[in-house]
Image (cartoon, helix red, strand yellow):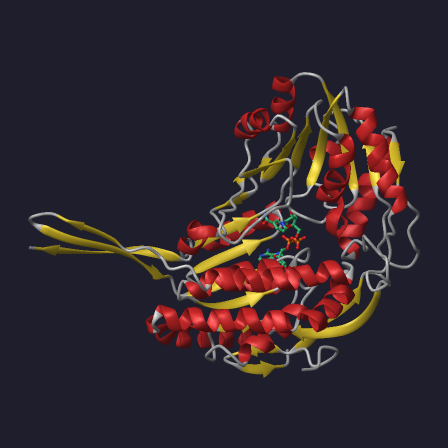
Length: 469
Ligand code: NAD
């Protein structure tokens, strides 16, 4: 298979060119290096019709057979890791070794969901026999973002298809290529119409969320767009799952071993150039260890290479797209203009969308860099003395996605974790997500659940057969 050219949509099991084309930019050079199809409204209708036509047979297929096909998709994805990772680096920017983890992660999700079977509950009395089982919804509209384009698309594909739904999937216009190639790989395995992949601009997302042919929308992206998606879904009561933004707090207690945790905290904040929904975005550090951790983090930032992910030795790549680059630069300018102390890492190359790793030294709680999700390599570090006070500060956010606590006293860490108002809280680790564990944003970080049995059941509805005896 050629990964350098031939980017086509998958509609009804066929490779299809768009009505037009959209440019795809390599963020390390800011230059267009490929084009992806631009789906027309008529082509979207075709994709939805293909998914509708495929639904009855896919739903009726024995679950073991469906699971076997999903497992095959996982194996095929794994088998194309190298080529997909190279393409991933060019379109997304992340260094190739880390890109491989994303492809393998996507495959792992498919494998895991190929082993999940929804429960059946039976209730029997003298007068009744009641069976509650779960049935698929129909055609799912899946929309994914640019920061983890393959992985987050596969979260949706794995669960929705395992549940017996069919799908039309739209990746971000900034990162369409790997997902188009995944569609092409799966075309050889899945019955036509079960998984359709379409690409185009944001407008395509608007057409999709208002399309009456979908039973459900599974969306990952910003909170602002998530609200529009929910509004569009209300018209015909489509089910929605929304995985949205976060402004995650990490709390570092005074008993930590700084040498042991500094690297972990650094990459928990800056991996993927800090473009992770569950990255540490506010780092609260006890005053006893504040300077020690700050100096270690700045030391790591100065020692690592930021550059083109295709080059040997690069640890962090560019910001993925111009829009996000300009937003992060603006936040940086605001921090400078407000007189905040910025501690920066190694110099970055010219040409692409590069921003040096920046640690903001104890800014006021109400500064923009603390209050807003940067989604780029600017990390505010904030001092605290009192545990109750820091938990209250961590919880003031309108977001509630994830967070972390660092302490040698694991029980104290768990106690703090339970008081945080987020869906996931890590203790002495971060960024750990598994296909079997539910992932659910609290507050304005989301609506509904992905992953785990709860995530599978979000793509289904209970059906009760109640029999008189
Ligand atoms: P975005 O909301 O701009 O775009 C996400 C997707 O929605 C893209 O495919 C885009 O084309 C599409 N879209 C844009 N406007 C639309 C509309 N009106 N209707 C329907 N679809 C539309 O988000 P982004 O900039 O791609 O991603 C960054 C954001 O995603 C961050 O806020 C980040 O925290 C969040 N995110 C959340 C999670 C999570 O699991 N909670 C994971 C990754 C990213």
